Image 1 (spheres, rainbow, N blue to C red):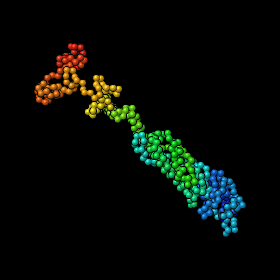
Image 2 (cartoon, one colour):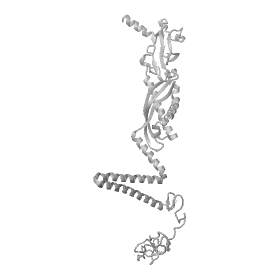
Image 3 (cartoon, one colour):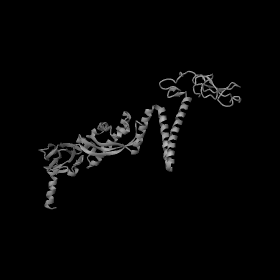
Image 4 (cartoon, rainbow, N blue to C red):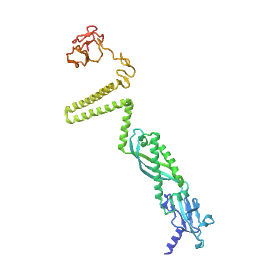
Length: 397
């Protein structure tokens, strides 16, 4: 070894400090346990130096440049090696960063979360970055980092995993308790609320390790594009249902969408033939759509009549504002002009049975007389071929 190498080695042994490449580490351990007396200890303004002996903290040095001598730092007397005549300190020195460390990235799967607004489970993810700060360097080294060689990445990974677990739990709980629609969460509408909830929840877990999560920066709760489109469609359909009014409105809305879809499909299919026929068939397709919609409406009305003559919660023939003209709720059907009951059929002259209109009696088989015709205005009996009432001039039905 040349004199230059010897001098360089001697100078390096006299300097105890964190190297530049370790400035971003949360914790850095000085590699050499033998430190010459009178060495220069440099502690940066954003860190502290911990001195350990036999796994216990013996002393802490604040920022600044210090000469390692018992006259300056009294606790160093615990590290003096008597075998070297008191010229060497036997100690482990740890540098712990005390400033806020930003830009620590995290991300992962939250899991399948049920959207409170639609009831649909959706796979959810989160990513972003966070910052943390050491509140108690002794707790951090002894309780989490340990006395082994430097493994800064392992400590940061543990903090990141804890943060992700807390976000997963808190977001799921907030969606359930506060009924936040998932699309509002992914849009960033509740970013501040989620950040405060997560920071508060993390505090319980990491306080014992002398750490604090300061803030979440640029974190995003996200779902797949396909799931986002499906939720938007469900939200839109639900809004139409509310406007239509309840389950009956939903049935009408669903039938209308189906019929319009059928009409549009026919219109597109008809257009493939080219020429004027395509346009004609396109119009026919829309017509069929409206026709089918009308058919569904009639079927719904018949089902409601069979279920008790109720239409939207009112007696048949009555509107929401009152009863139909000439009808009282719970009253018997109005008699038709000239006797009988309106809509009850015809009476067979041979056997007296009331049967459906036709040429022959369904009860005895005898020919039926032609049904009598009455004026809808004055009730006068009209000849079968009459076009107007001879009493009041009203057109015959």
